[in-house]
Amino acid sequence: MAIILGFVLAVVGFTLGTGVLGGIRVSMGLEYWSTDLSWTIGYPFALLGWLAGVGGWKYWATEWFGGTAAQTPKGVKRYFEWNMDHKVIGVQYGVTFVALLLLSGLAAMGIRYELMQPGMQLFTQDQYNAVMSFHGIGMVAVAVAIMLGAFGNYVVPIMIGAHDMAFPRVNALSYWLVPPVAIMLVIAVIMGGWDTGWTAYPPLSVLNKSGQVLFNLAVITFGLVSILGGINFIVTIVYERAPGMTWGRLPIFVWGAFAGSLIAFFFTQGFAAGL
Image 1 (cartoon, helix red, strand yellow):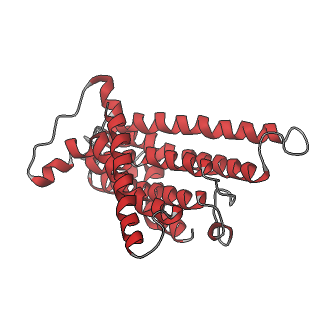
Image 2: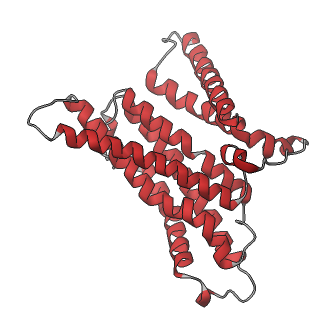
Image 3: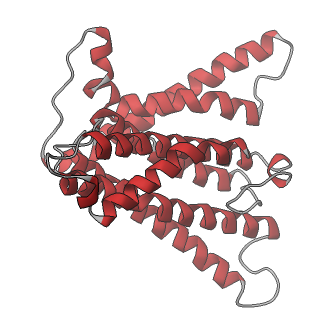
């Protein structure tokens, strides 16, 4: 299955990235492993491996080197591999964010259980802050992205009479960047978490455990998802409308998607810069 191959290539990519960094550090007389720096350098390599494994190479990037892209699968299998159909991508977004919603809800149940009695029963104080922060960013991600990612991808092209999104390959890329974000947030909690809440404002965010670095990498990746999606929706709504679908005839949902895309495109990078 493509997802399993994606995980395998992600591990290979991470090992390669950290290995190169470790070799450079050893040649400079430093220790081979530096948690924060190793994760920062290894993560982009892991991300490239993940994208290649889930189908980015087979269905898209192979054309850059003169190859022929494979035909996307049909049936249920298409939901678990790289696919450029806007309806399939909408379903992929929806299922992924429902899973993240349930995981964040489980964290909320842990928070409420801890508050049932005075003192600490289930978590330590640091663990409580980490779980609370994970719950916050998870719920915010679901609320922000499910409307555009899931419902927007599925219905906006239909509402404006477009055959598909303006950039189907970028649309697929933006979705397959999402699962690593959720995985990084979970790993961040395991590695000590971050106790800054979902906002991650300085100075707390610069004086924190290694989990803060993973949180930052996840948020920056999710910001890239938002920017790519925003560009795609803006271009689709402006240029892909059917004849006769004037601005005055656009459904209110399309106007909402357009406004949200403008915000994502122009202001997401500001959040990343403030981490």
